[in-house]
Structures are given as structure tokens and as C-alpha cells.
Length: 301
Image (cartoon, rainbow, N blue to C red; front, side, top):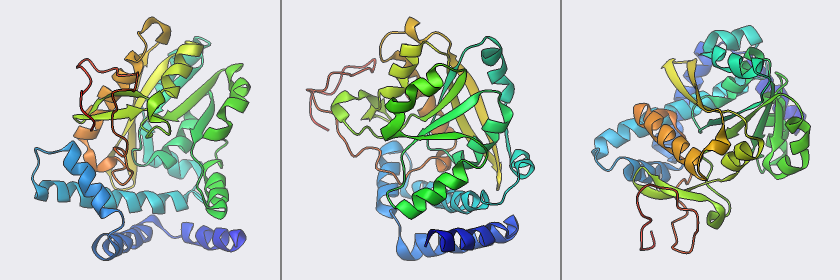
């Protein structure tokens, strides 16, 4: 089954982008208007994030999000055959931001969110930096799709590490000059161990691992966000957020990232993955790690 699916998708990946985007448009119309895939989750999330907007304004964001979602899917399939030159023409960034960090002999850690199209971005990142790039990810549950996704993601030589195996191989990159990329807006698996603060006005848990890892190694942390100047073209903004994490108070780095993430989402809301259940956990008074400047809510939410 894997080889049949791989062969089929490889043939699809050879189709010119202009035709692939027509296919993406058709999938969007089917899924949004007929199947309604996670439509309620998307609209509920948008209502939480943008209560000041009208229903019509939130619907516009939702439709643009779904178009980006299916463009991202078809673009990921393209990775099966896309050349490095094809991707480097379509993904740009201020890559030079990494040079002073690398030249200083230090490793670094990149925090980014679920912003389109991170799949294309990681391929070009690996080509544009001298760092040995490691990315921690959550595997797909289906074994066939996981094998396929892993093959697509690692074509450029990027090291993909399942989150469940991260601790086992930590020494592999800790002893070398590496770039560790983390999607730092994941919903925490254990809410009691998360850092909590308001995000779009709602108490929200953020995984503590990215900050704790940076503080443990005391390596520079870079924030990254992605914009879409036009269809099929992306630009990543790279910002050195902190060079000495141990100089910050516990939770401060995470709080800085939350502020950064919310600002970037507000600028381009259609670029973020609204279909995941970001607010599925609520704050409880027995949780220890509230890092917001404001006091934690006294009631359950």
C-alpha cells in the first residue's frame, strides 16, 4: 500500500504548480462547503481569538485559512519531486540572522508556530544554514502516512526526531553545533506541567520543554514567523530573541514567545493552523506555572 500511494503521489507531484493549485481550489470548495472539515472548531477558535470582529469578518479569515491549508497540503506533496532550486525560489528569509550565532561557535534553538508553509520552509532552512538541523515533530498516527511524510520531510537531509524519542537522542546534537527547531505552540499533553498565561485573552497552556531546553544548554533562541507575499511564495522573518536564556526569569522566554506569536497571528490570521484544538484545556487553580503579568483567573475556564 505504501509503494502504491508513494507512486501515485509522486506522479501528482510532477504536475505543474498552476494545475496543482486548481486541484487545491477544488478540494477547498468540496471540503469547506460540502464536508465542513473541522469547520466548527475553526470558527469557535476564531471567535475566541477575535471577539471584536463580526461573524462575516471571521468567515473571511476562515475561508482564507482553508485555502492556505489545502495549498499547504498540495505543496507538501510537491516535495516528493521538487528540486532545491524550485524551493529556494519560493521560500526566502533573512537567513543571515543565523551567521553571527554560527560564527560564534554556538548552537541555537528556533521557536516557530503552526504557520504555513513550514514544510517547504524547513527544506530551504537546511540548505541556507551551516548548522546541522534537527526538528522535533509529532508522528502521524497512520503508519503508511507517517512513513510517507518522513520520506518527504527528510529529502533535504534535515534530521526529524519524534517527540517520544527526543530525550534518547538529545546527546546526539547537544555535543555538536546544531540548530534545533521546535513548533512551540503545541497544546501541552500534561496541562499541569505547562506554562500558563493569557493568549488572545484566554488562559492557555504552552509546553515548557522549549524554554527548559534552551535554559539548560544556555543557547541563543530565535523566533521565526512566515508570511505569504503571493500564492506559492513564502518569506520567513527570523529574529534573535535571546542570546543568554539563563539570564531570564523562569517562564520569561515562553512569555516573550507567546507575545511574539500573538502579534504575528494578528497580522496574518489566515496563516495559522486554526483547525487544531488550541484551547481544549482550561486553567485550573492547582496548576503551578502561571507566567502572565496579570494574576491568574480564580475561576475555572
